[in-house]
Image (cartoon, rainbow, N blue to C red; front, side):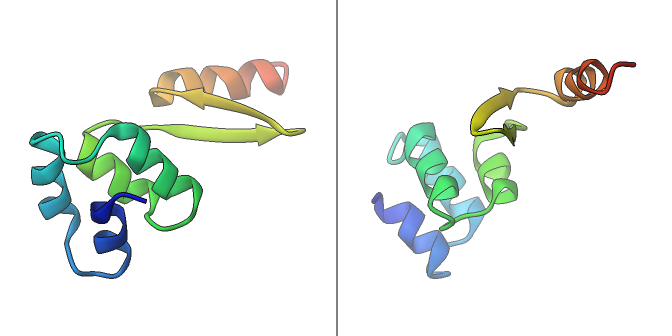
Length: 82
């Protein structure tokens, strides 16, 4: 696990400090995503650090990812038959 993910989880560093490290490529999006997946950092912290909004939905063990709210809302509309 990347040091910055652990530091954020243990409150040794703030999301803004990890964002600076992210700018220097000391931590990657994949490492941050793994931290979210393992429950070490929150989705909100991921979004602050990467400047990206990311949504995940699990439907019958199928994970769908959406890069913005427009696609997410469209999926719900299609899923519920509107």
